[in-house]
Length: 218
Image (cartoon, rainbow, N blue to C red; front, side):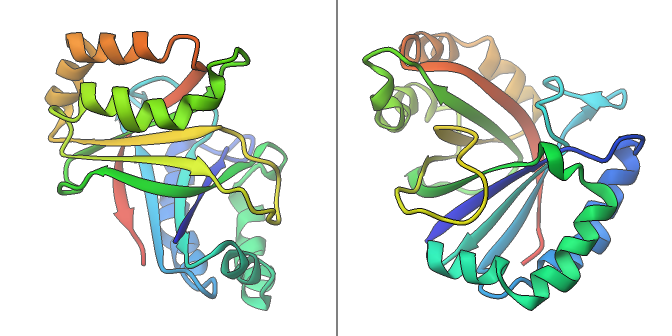
């Protein structure tokens, strides 16, 4: 199985509220029809006073589409359903000039319940000699530091196969499930979080994070 992360900014002039309403209703109905989709998840960033809790990540929608393979994904996005239904709907509310994606292989590190708040971190590889070990470090030392506070932890790395669409926007993604926002706040001030950040020094070169609630469409 592969997971396609899509990161979509809203169209200019559209409010966050209108974008999110359209995404979870009309667009969810449309995208859920893409042939071959095994699972479709929307990650809605948590807001505080109308603003993104962890700051604007560079996009307003973060979707996950699971397929059996890269070939099945490409067939789905080459289908008449996508061309006639989904793509037309995207033009209504997404700024496609700033859209990005990552097609990944997921590795479940801690297989606990997917409940509460989902912390998503997207990393770019450091250009130094340690950069190639990013996925291994996330699955190993970082996971070891954080798994006591996360009920579920998954690491995603870009697939090796060629596929349609733009190149991968990130070199690795990690998702952690936490009980609630208090648990998220405690994580950020914990020694374990500081240890994880230190471990990634020289391995990752910057990251984008969002705390989200999930909607499972399919």
